[in-house]
Length: 68
Image (cartoon, rainbow, N blue to C red; front, top):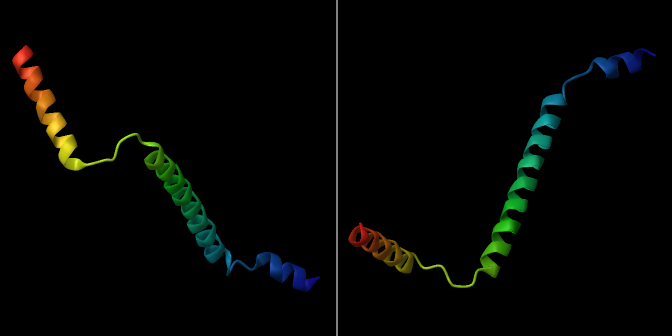
């Protein structure tokens, strides 16, 4: 009976177990986000190019200035 009381009061591994659970949750969320991001990138219609996006934004801004 003394052994059960001693085990019940022992908290030495509690901090490590909490960190393991915390990091496990972060890893699961990161994997889920990467899976969603990958499926989004695979289903996009056109390739993503920063140069084309910048040109489109500039043209839109210039068009809006001339229509005002």
